[in-house]
Length: 290
Image (cartoon, rainbow, N blue to C red):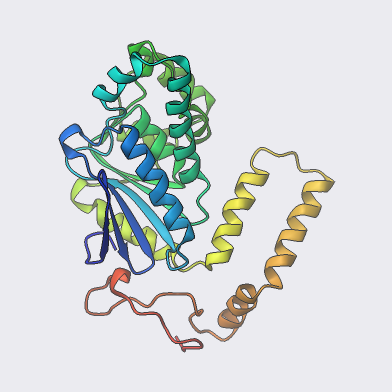
C-alpha cells in the first residue's frame, strides 16, 4: 500500500495514489510543511468526496510529503484573511469546516500518517480521521491562542479525540507535546519508529480491508449514532434494527457463508506473495477456498 506503485492523481497541492483498495492522499506542499491555504482546503474536500464515490476504495490514508505532516494554516493565506471582512472570513472558515466534515464522515476507514510537525489545523486533520499512527519523534501543538485566535472548526473533532480535560490544557496553553503524550491522551492510537511508520500503517490497512465494505460504512454510522447516547428503549430497538438489516443483506450473508465454509470472503484482497503487499494484490474469485 504505502510505498508501492499505484495510479496517481495530481492536484495543485495534493497527490492522490490509488493502490489496490487503498487511496493515499498526500498533502504536497513540503516547502511550507504542508501548511494549508484555500486551494488545499478545496482540493482536500474534492479528493475525499471523489474517494467516497469510488466503490473500489476500501480505506484512505492522509499523509504529508516532506519533513512534516501539516504545520497548520499558511502564513500568507492568514495575512490575506486578516484584511478581509467578516463575511469573507466566515466563508473561508466554513470551507475549512466542510473539509473536516468530509473527512470525518467518509464511509470508508481513514488513517492519518503523522510525522514531523502536526500543528493547529493539522491537528484537526488527525482528529477527523478514524485512526492515527504517529512516528515517535512527531510533535504536536494546538497553537491558535498564541496568535490571538481560537481552535474553532477543529475543536469538535479534537475534543472527541482527546477528551475535554486534555483539550482544556492544550487548547489554552498552546504548548507543544510529544507523540508519547498524544498517544496517552488518545489523539493517536499507535506509535512507530520513524523508519517503520509505513510498515505499521500497512499492517493496520491489511486488517481494515478484511472488513466488508458495507459493514465498515454501517459501523462508522453506528459509532456516530450511539456515541454518548443514553441506552434506552429507542436505542435498543435501533441497534436491533441495524443488525437485522445487515444480517439480511447480500454482504452479510456472504460473510457468514465464508466464515462457516472456512474460506475467504469475496471482498477480501489476496496479498501478492512475491511482495507481501496488499497494494499489489489481485481480487480473489468468488468462492475461492482459503
